[in-house]
Length: 135
Figure 1 (spheres, rainbow, N blue to C red):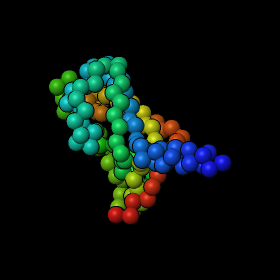
Figure 2 (cartoon, rainbow, N blue to C red; figure 1 turned 90 degrees about the horizontal axis):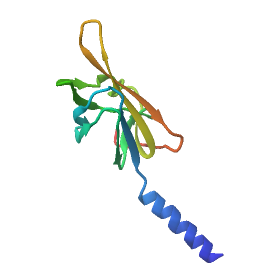
Figure 3 (tube, rainbow, N blue to C red; figure 1 turned 90 degrees about the vertical axis):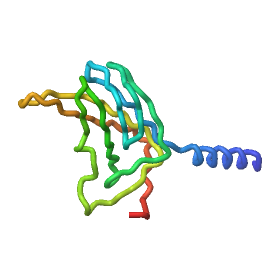
């Protein structure tokens, strides 16, 4: 009985220490993406049709929804995803320390002939949101 309890404790403790957030960046643009940065962290090049997986100890969220600040070069044009920044000042800031996210990266050509960076986020059900006491 004590052996089973010890094994359970060690497993739970190890899981807590290795908690992380995994982001899968999927390039769905049909072109290579260069100088990709996520929260100013250098990601590098993501080839067309490929996925780049990166991990973080934690990420910031707004009302439990993570925001992804991403910038890159598409066909030599610099693009930034501004819509993924925090929404407003009266929300609840949190830190997410565990979970898996998929970020589809797409680029649209708008009516004015300019490229627009679009990211769509998918989240699995094992994410864990921890309140950030350092608001």
